Length: 427
Image 1: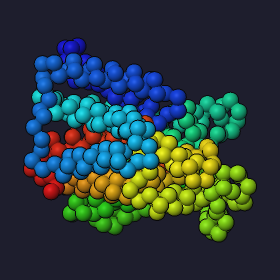
Image 2 (image 1 turned 45 degrees about the horizontal axis):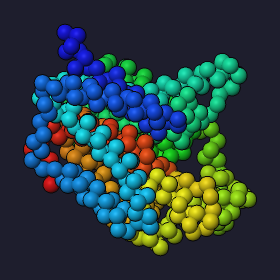
Image 3 (image 1 turned 180 degrees about the vertical axis):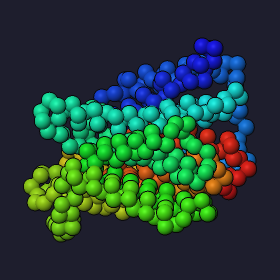
């Protein structure tokens, strides 16, 4: 019995921490340890029950991933300004992503793997840990100092933590919508527990005060409402769905505005940035206005100029944007434009971004169709992908450990979707 439990549920002991630590500063070694534990657990469980490697009947996502990988290899080998550096970075970063995608799919496609609940709890737990960490940190700071520390968590500041908090929202919305449409539940727990987790998630998001998370939470809530209206038939009226949707969006906005004033003067600061933004002034710090708007506009503008000059890419790398800024402006210290789309396109060219977005769109389409067939994992996949890829357009990174964590979790959700619905895969 104990052997069965370890085989079936032991993975949650490494799955949740591995996902939770992706993107967390200073945890590279710990992430590697948990990945090593995961590999041991995988090969142990597969010793007598090898995975089913037969592909689904239609695998558009697999072809797109293959095309993206091939393009990155070609770009790094022949079009990069430094082929050796780009290829080294590609093997080290993207190679790890491909390995974790294989691990996720191999677990799901085990011959003896019938109960997938531990995987869902493990993946969700990796994101919800950041909700609990944020709330615990704020409580600890309030008890110790008498005031909150807006934007911070035990596992990092809002830039590192908020994408995972909003990721939790994607899972919870998928579960709630599925419950109220009479479809199977994503989590086998009482509804009041799911609502409590939703309230905690929105509270943590408000305490982090990340503008991008607020925007993406509104997008996810609207998507969930559309799913309810499209697939609800007579179960829920459109008016009920709309009212609930507006209530949740309103709650999200209230939490963000109560805990922070980061939205104050947004239009005025953005206008000033558009009129004055200059890349050298941005890095010298001699500018007027809100840096959140000024810097992002200046960094993004420089990145777009780089894309215009190098439409086929500057070269794969975790420091590609900084390398371009240094080579062009002789400015050190640049890390990112804070738009993952701009960074990724500058590194890998317009074809690279086009393939990545096509793959993302196919994952969303797959999940949407699978949810229509009654599987709540499909809606979780769609919301999850939209949250990360959409957020990266305005604030995020499409390289490094944060992309690794996203790819790992998305691969689990994708595999859980296709294994139950191969016949209905999109072309």
